[in-house]
Image (cartoon, helix red, strand yellow):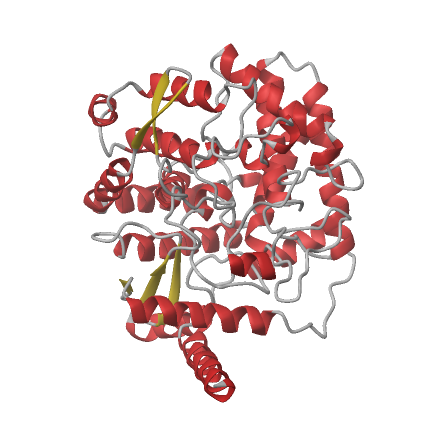
Length: 480
């Protein structure tokens, strides 16, 4: 029996290794030049489990200690090296970084690289052109595979012509949000008149509009699929549609499996607003589909998830201790849920932010950066034995950066009092210290500031996430 299990595991890993090499992005890039990258998505049983095998091999390979250690370096040097790796022409699409999975995550365009064409984050014109090319390739692959299949959380390349559509850990709530954010990044590229970027950005705008125009039927299909999953939920006399009333939905904090989470429903609201802005439906058509105005929908979500005076993480697992009842992903994304247009909205964000800024339970050991949550979440069996704290008592620089950006928005709405600006500065200064000490931009840190590491998983070098930090840091510097 043990021999059978052992041989089965060996065959599983050999299959994974074969497709890991066959579908590797660098090999894909070479084949693209040779014969065109005409990819077909598949969500059938063999494809999904082949993708699982590929990912298992990927994590095993990337868990082997590297003989080359990153050395401490100045921020500018680390950034230049990271950008050159992240947006190299050998890639066929943007990945998180190395060592890590090289799969394609649609959500990342909203969560982890929402402003790749911000001039403050660009090194030179060649850098801008590479970013535009990779965004176009990645978005084209996603859209090509979305005409009849709801966007999954992840596309895993198996061959040069086939991607497996895989949902980790649940069906997505934010993949369409990511795709629309990516298209808007291209369409809204700065005119940059009088600068070296003008020509590259003009091309980005043209390509973005082309992508949007050619894929309107696909995007409308994706939107209708998302809306079709909404179910009414009532709390305290307020009824609002939830995407995860009956089953959990994946978001950027995807190892958390609670139902009725704020972030998943904020994803839906923000997706509907972007869809109207992109012209998928008119505002009137959208509001007819959801049975209420977008403003009313937002007020309902604020009332339901803010019924305790701050934004709770989940309506399924409420706690008497406010600090144990929140997660940092409440800050959402650039151009997402939070606009602070009403005092109710500003007060709920402020109260939730203060929980993080004033509670030691939600802060790292240095009391400068913020944890995802005060406690590790209930997770699946495999997450529990492999990475229990992945979206719990850990520091994610990316979520800290988004929190900083929302703090700066809130500070501006309050007349620039400086209270939240100082908190923002403290967080970014600490993150820069970590980057310079490590010699790379970390995906995830332990509370003591060291890269997160378990027996099977280690922190990624999140090269493609670095420009977002630089962009927000530039914003803060401009305010000083």
